Image 1 (cartoon, rainbow, N blue to C red):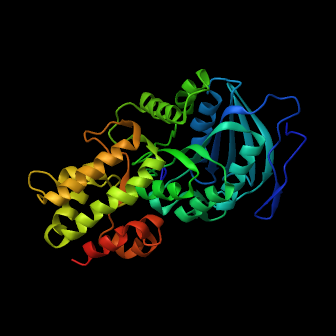
Image 2 (cartoon, rainbow, N blue to C red):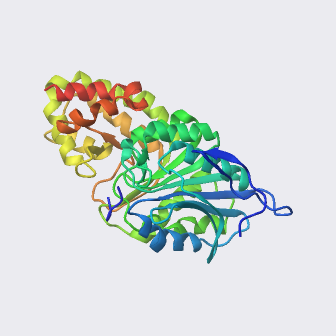
Image 3 (cartoon, rainbow, N blue to C red):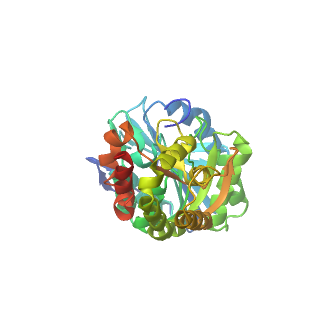
Length: 384
């Protein structure tokens, strides 16, 4: 959850979304060809974050420097009204391009619709999609209070897969979405290049869009990696070195392969030493929990405690840990963090006691849990 809150075009595409015929305005005849980049924000303000959209996000989207090679567009669902707006942004101005009846932004079909229609109405060589709302790591994202819904990881994966549109940069303007479980779910879609997300809380202000995308407006031929890194840099400029803030650019392809190789090897080494080191594992987790009460830990911080002077000395586990951290580092680009400890860029769930009892079964359904055996390992930890 976030910190501080836990003239329409004449031609339309027609698509059925939860019982409503809707479509985005098509590009007018005679307009320029495809843009280099489209920045598309999926704004689920249908909850207690509506004020944040109006006070911070909307103005900062307007302040992205103008470029004829970049299109900025958002879908906004508000709590105070029963309608959804499509808003186009050009430096200093915002135009409502279309208005529809209430849509459920916690439904994967709505996100699918948005991605599909953006690709058709605002075609570009490369695409940034930013999911804006509350975030809950592997639990999900986009809580729609009017419709009483939210998207699980399975829903998010389904939305991206069904849209079938490659997303060069997927940003999460939402708390705690830099989970290795989230990255792996997107890796399995084969449709996401880089994720920009935080391990911890995202402030009420959210992403500083003007600072994040000013470099792209200046040079619309930046690569996917350069755009993601510029987003992280803009975040750092805006927020400075506050210890509870971080943002990272995560290479989905690299980290997905890490999960299938180095992570599983590390988990196996952890499993082999469970009888001897379970108390060390639990103590290291308690010292490395990133957001209190969410049972997620940074892998680098966890490992530093686990392998400390009074920690684990097993050479096999130590080698597996070093290999895992080195591999993760290869998949992490720019980072902005004000903490004293160097963060790995991703978190991992470590569910113990009541957390395991209440949410373990749900966690066990994740692709990450099934493919790596991490849930089975956590079951072992909780048996002691």
